[in-house]
Image (cartoon, rainbow, N blue to C red; front, top):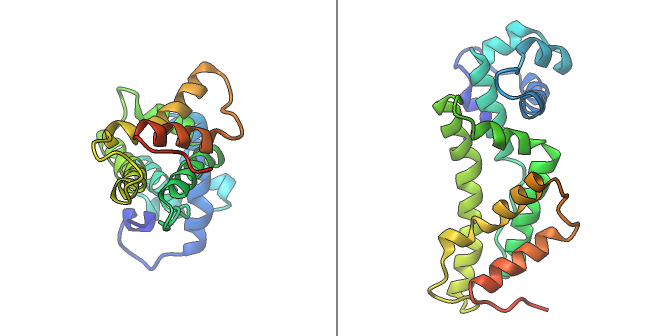
Length: 197
C-alpha cells in the first residue's frame, strides 16, 4: 500500500509535500521515538506547515504510520534465476534500509509495551511481513531448484539475517562490511545448501 493511501481522503494531494514530510517524519520517529515525535518539528524541517500535515495525516499516529509504510517502498530487490544471489541482495537491501532510514531505533519502538497496536500492525504489514516473504521466497526457490534441503526450516531461516543484525546492534559492535554475503552464506548452509564460489 502506498503511504499516501494511509492519509485522510479529501482534496487532491500535493506529492511534493508528501515527499518532503514523510522522510523527515521517519527520521525524527527513528531518532526520538513515537512519544517525542513533533508535528511542528517535522513541519519546520520539511519546510511546510502543521495545517498542511494535519490535512494529510489527522494525528501524529497517522503521520508515523505513513512514514513507516514508506520504508516498504525503497526499491526491493527483484527475483532472478539465482536464489542465493537474490538472498544476498535482499539481506543487503535490509542493511541499507535500516541504516539509511535510521530504522533500528524504530524497530526498538515497535517492541515497547505502550506502542499503539494500530501502528505496530502497520509496521508489521508494511515492513516485517514483506521482508520475511521476500527472504522466504529466495529460500523456497532454492528448495525448488534442488539447491537446498526439502526439509529446511524456512520459518527459522528467514529470521536469522535480521536477528543477526539486531544482535550486532545490541552488542555495540558494528556489523562487518561483508555482513550481507556472510550471513546469507550461513543461512544457505543451515538450509542444506552449498555456497556458490
